[in-house]
Image 1 (tube, helix red, strand yellow):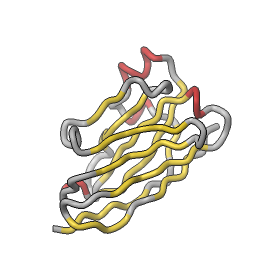
Image 2: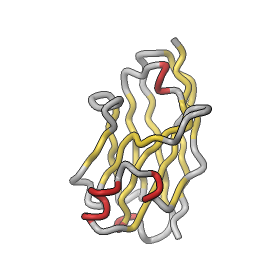
Image 3: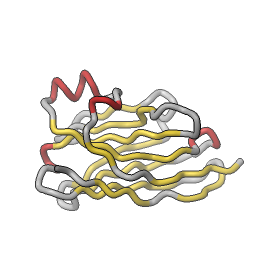
Length: 129
């Protein structure tokens, strides 16, 4: 079982920055691929970014590429999402996700929320115009 706790959300003006953190419990962090998704009211939960368990493979949604950076710190069992040049359309609840999977399972399913079994409670990010 993996428990995830997000933090770092808040209210920021357009063009600003935020860094989200997700602390994972248990001894499986080093074996887990990690991801970030987001959900706006009335919308489906959508993929934002993912990182392989080694940290060597990264994926981003086109809408955040070049503005967001995902990273992980194994010593702290924490994954981060650095968000820059924020836009009002980035406003959403951001969720951290984890899965124990092979590398092949990761690269073929990273963008599908159904492929991620473990989720945090979410943290609100609001970008004002």
